[in-house]
Amino acid sequence: MYIRSEQPADVDTIRALTRAAFADAPHSSQTEAAIVDALRDAGALTLSLIAEDGGKILGHVAFSPVTVGGDAGWYGLGPVSVWPDNQGKGIGQALIRLGLDALRGMGAKGCVLIGDPAYYSRFDFVADPAVTYAGLPPQYVQRLAFGDAVPRGEIVYHAGFEAS
Image (cartoon, rainbow, N blue to C red; front, side):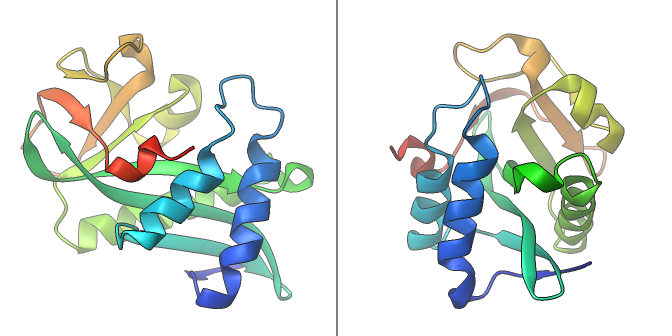
């Protein structure tokens, strides 16, 4: 398996992959594929990475700019998608780790996400009550600072996250 940047020919497969990955997820609004499309259309996919093996796309992860308490330089992780028959094989982890390394290399302040703390703690994400997202329990709102700057305030995602 190797990881590469998304190419224009990947768009339809990414859409199908994202739909399949979230089809049975109880926490899903079933808008994840539309979110990725909206971010791409707006030029707001800072990183769009593909895991591929033998010419087959296995997984995808998106990172896009966010503000935290009005502070820029932060990025949101997600969605991350792996075909259901390939989940649990480390593909998502590899995509996330490479994406976080790329953000560090770009000089990002850090990354935030909404997700399962049991899963994302392996990447050193922590729930921080100083970082919020309207209407969500604080344990699911997580941050990873790449330096000394620790964010405070509400996360504001790109308007593409309002896609439906």
